[in-house]
Length: 344
Ligand code: 1CP
Image (cartoon, rainbow, N blue to C red; front, side, top):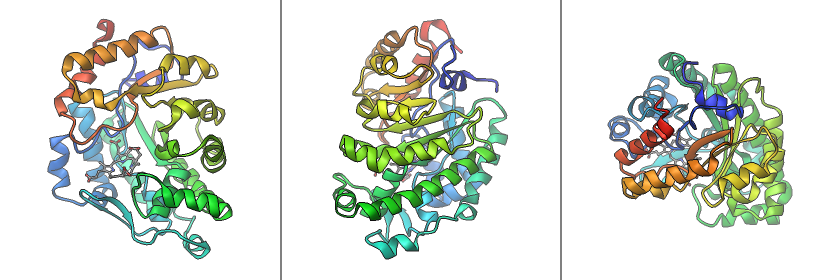
């Protein structure tokens, strides 16, 4: 690997500067994304390996980040299991057949790798294009977060149906979570076999849960997934919004990296975790709307705070918003690369 900053930091080795990549780095804030998006539906983009590769490469070519992330979505596992998924501009994802009862759970399949073969195909095309320059991150949605879309039928602000489901029907919820966990293990191992260099488990909406519910309905399954990955030399990153609170539990699942939202003091979190667990984060993505002088100042503050700590990957606390100016994102990457004159 020509640029091994990301993999070194993920494995808690020393690096000349923190590596940088950003969640949702291939997306709607990029004019070049729209040139492709205007021609195809989102799912067509995900399911056509050449197009998925074109989009994956945009932030490598235009921003110069230190890692690529597969262009796909966390909801493709739900679709492969039998969810009737569509994405509509301005509405977001929809499952037309939300899960309500035992019959709906029984109807979901777990032997679904054939239906996700397009992802393995995309990974092979992307690795040819990357040509050993930077590593490729694969990913999947964590069971609780994927379940929330299957139960709500789409995005949610308050997760009312999901919480009702786990509170009133815990046994059904566990059946559903177990099915998603099995698919997620197979799916991430398929991505590793196809050639990704790291994997990230996205439990984006875990922050909606209480401590006890997080342990029972989210953490338990993330532990199982991480334990069953064929992870030799492939670092595992665990992400959730809520990680400022749940980090000690997330670390128990033994990922290589815990990705932290922007509420926490990253140094405190790092020092509270067992040795050998790296951290990723944790700039508030809203900082990227602000003036460039503010962007530089906040990145420098974070870097000074993390100085002397091995195992630090710069990222946002959550994804880039679609209306953040492209040149601000590019500027942030330049600030990281210029840190202490590293300019690599
Ligand atoms: O650049 C990248 O990060 C790679 C591609 C990627 C990733 C990692 C996409 C493309 N989606 C995801 C993960 C994802 N998808 C998450 C976890 C990360 C996070 O917390 O942000 C989640 C929750 C989703 C679900 C999703 N996909 C939503 C709903 C979000 C919500 O608030 O409920 C939406 C709108 C999407 C569509 C989507 N996924 C990706 C893109 C570029 C888009 C927009 C599609 C478009 O152009 O309309």
